[in-house]
Image 1: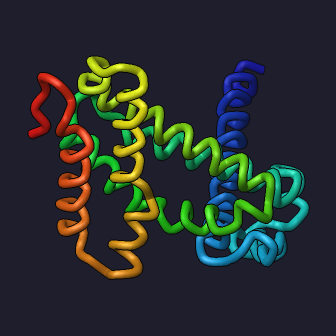
Image 2: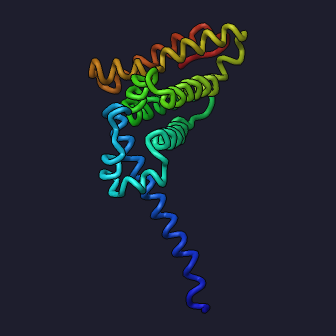
Length: 204
């Protein structure tokens, strides 16, 4: 009896790890198709085959394409927050974190934005993304925004949103194929311009 019981937690833990790894493979397969294709055209059969599981496993774990989309959105949100973990006032760190984030997730985000008007589930995720991006800017640039009136702080955040928007990343990195340092310099210039009028603060 003593030789058997201590092994049960290990077996349960191993099963839990295996289930987690299976879920990650499924989400990886789904994410790749969402990044490169259209939500309407994604087939559970293809996701399952790429993940090395059955369709029933996908359905049992996520419930279908909408469930996959929601789970992928939650995972992406966690990844984005991890990449953008910088201290308030650290402009250089914030810009570097933003570039890292867009290089990792920008194509997936842009593909999602292109479909948000057709799929309410995608729209919910993109709206959450917009809200998070603005809140992140408010937190990072709080040392500059705190001294402004509410209206001026809103206008300044609007300018920061425009300077750091993923559409600008797509324009520079994908449409015009500009190198990353050139895109970085442009963001730095636009961010400095957005903050230039803030009283009593230096932007460099």
